[in-house]
Length: 483
Image 1: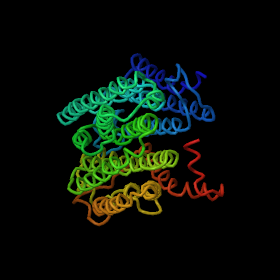
Image 2: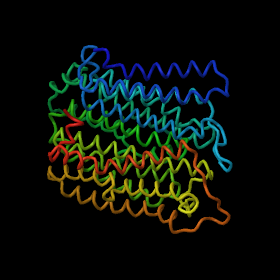
Image 3: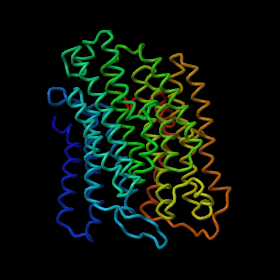
Image 4: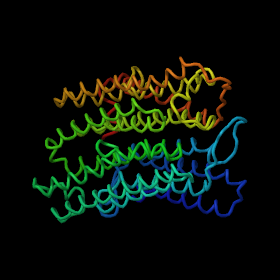
């Protein structure tokens, strides 16, 4: 049964291995650290794959594995692996291409180690079945992100890290206070035992409010989203990409743990609140994105709006909701990282981050411009791309539970998002390049990563329908995520 925890152990051992190798090898030979890290992630992925038919619990039920945890762990590992690939040009400190403007990010061994530690926290988080292990896992996943956000030694990064620490500490305090109230109400720390012992009371609703506030910070749900734009802009761009997907995935996993495992008996009570949060989040996120000029702040508000779509899944029955939200999270992670891959490429080559700086990219690098366009259209939900399919499933859940007004709000917001995503497409394809602009070359690793993520994003758009046709079922793909 200890094989259930093997993926986490592999990730942690890889982190210490990277730290040890970094200590003893010369600067010139530290290029081996990235391949070693990716090998460790591959081994952890293989361990998850070979245990997938198996489910069970360890440590008196405090650590458990089931079909939902497998897919979340795959997602976290994939996000970390892609982030490492996107970081290579910056962390290795080499001028990969003749005209590259790549800034040097030092201490690559520590960088990989901290990424692996935050990954291990996310993996433990989704398997936690106890309030104490849940909170400790969340802190292990969150605290390293504070360090990564301020990795660059400049004023913007310092400000980003400080704001992230302050808001993160506040969110953790609110969450811990809510957990303590749950323990006081039931005398239990086991999630299942708490769910059996809860009865409606003012203290329970206070605990729920505190917990929602803490989760809202992780998920960038309005009105707990104020930290996102500054942190996204100040952090190194690969870490901005990681924050936009892995941090949101951890928040979604935490929300799963609490809303389905603890508050499942109060399903009807939370529906209207979730619907209001979803409507506010997608609306304010989209309206905020319209007026942004910096590409990283733009993506911050895009991520906020995407959180509004994601939490629509909590409005429906548990099996369909979990499957739809996990699928949409996969779509969002792969598509968003494809877009960030192009942003990192452009920033490395030009040193610029304004939306207007993308003018004429279709002429200076047509393939990267195409990847950016497909990624943005995927996030907007243009058919037949994967974003459209993912939103269709989430909208169907909201409609089936009677929230037709929310579906209408979401459809209007999808139209608004298309407008601001088209701003970038317009710069790339309609506006001419700046005077004297040269062709922008892409490094092999970054080009391969962007190409792969774009193709995977497109493939996810047809996967559910293809799977259902082959298996002659109307919703057979959902059984892949929830058994």
